[in-house]
Structure formats: structure tokens, C-alpha cells
Length: 138
Image 1 (cartoon, rainbow, N blue to C red):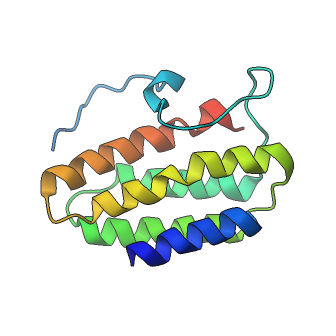
Image 2: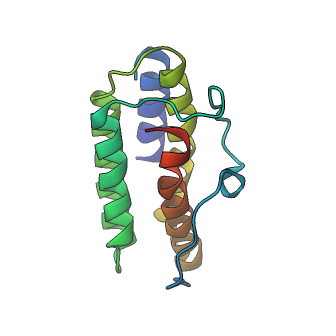
């Protein structure tokens, strides 16, 4: 399954488009320093509505997560595939969107690990990643 998702993401990229803190802090670009995203004149890229909705759906899944990592991973991968299928963005905004999305494939893989601590950390990392979407896209 991991290979399938990785291949799917790479194919689409080239052809188209257990500690929970109760305190919420704003996500900053430095929190997401593992990504290779650039902004245009320090302004977010314009994204199509389907992409923004897809990211919001994934964030809702992560925020509503309670117990079953494998179910969460499956639901996230489904929304991820739908997001790619509905992508109509073009140009540099499209390229930067892929720079934002592709790191999520590795995070999805970690969510399904047999180690609960690794899975829990991956869920938190994905939540932070998804919350950072608005730093790069509007």
C-alpha cells in the first residue's frame, strides 16, 4: 500500500496535479521547515477551491481522530487521492502545491506503523502540516 501511494503521488506530481496539547498556537513557516515551498513576493499562492476543501477534510480527519490509526491512514489516503484528481492548478502555484503535498506521503506511512508512539507523532506532525496550508495557499 505504501508503494502504491508513493507511486500514485509521484505519477500525479509528474503529470498533473501520545501527547495532545490542549493549547493551540499559530503555525509558522519555521514549524514547517522540512518543506521546499517558496512564496511569490511573500504572498500565498492562489489554490483552487477543491484543493483547499481537500486539505480541510484531511485536517478534520486528523482533528477528529481518536483511536484507529489504520482507519485514519486509509481515510487520509482517500482524501489525498481525491485532492490530486481534482487539482486544476497550473504553473508555479501547481508546482509549489506539490512541494506541500508530497511530504505527506511519508507521514501517512508513519501513521500506519506498528509503533503507537511513531503513529501518534505522525498524526501530530500531519496536523501541524495541514494547519500550515494557509501560510502558503489561499
